[in-house]
Length: 398
Image 1 (spheres, rainbow, N blue to C red):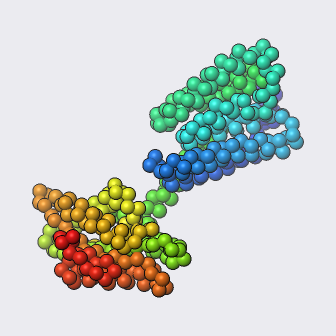
Image 2: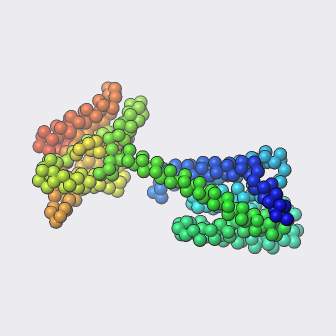
Image 3: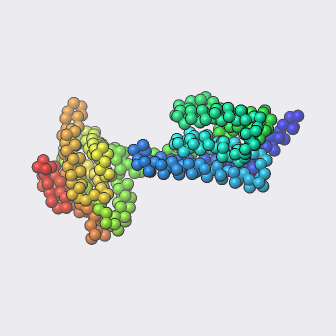
């Protein structure tokens, strides 16, 4: 008897087809995870509706593609037969449940809810005459409740291993009862299939967690490479890459591109009088105040720390005249928001230079040198000033 059981386990689970399906499932999970994380970085609740819909459609298409891909590979491995269909079914259930946890949008929810009516053979009208039809209806209602619960409670489920395991069991159980209604296999096999499903989910979750950790590490590395450690805004390395991109794009377009460069007035005095730690706080205060105000007023500008106390703002699609009013508002907000440090009020002012990309500019450096020159004109005129295309204004007079 033990020999028969061992032989059955080897024939059913430890064969090349099982290995191929498992590897394909892991591969599809990897693709889904990468796509989902890539889209998450590009959209948020504040993103335009059409962008969010497009992202959700892409995620839904990837999930649908995975279902079809598994089906085709399974049929190829089995020469079109349905032998070992449990293997294919568990792989699909694994991807469906995994996507419920990873991709939290209504398209994924609807795919999970409609899937019992979409898989092979499920639309057969003979089911209406099946004596086990009540089991199908009860199991489907049970599945709907489980899927909706997972959709709205994902975070809480993921934070508890026992709840996570419990949802896997209920999800798999409801699905295998649905499959039992259509395919009429021994009831005891439901427990067998459920156990295999849980093993599948464990393998996939382990692999997915490793992949997510690697992607998070990659994101951390991207932040370290592209963002200034002290102020948290984009750094000079990021500016260099962005500068090449925008010059290649805007030098060929009629859309305006304007650059503003500013530095903190008398910054050396903060360091000399109060110490370098205070100087660091001044840098962070200026960067955070300017970036927050740009975000709240939706200026669509990008702030970079060029080096030391110097910063650059890139305004795409805006003229210097438009940017002049934006800069005045940014500067006024900074002046009205003094830095309070150790009970002491520190007033901070800035000087600006502004210029746009011109037809005669052969590289970004031409624009940068011009903006840099305008900044120094503001400083040489007494600081707390703004120079726009060679014309200098006193902020206090504007």
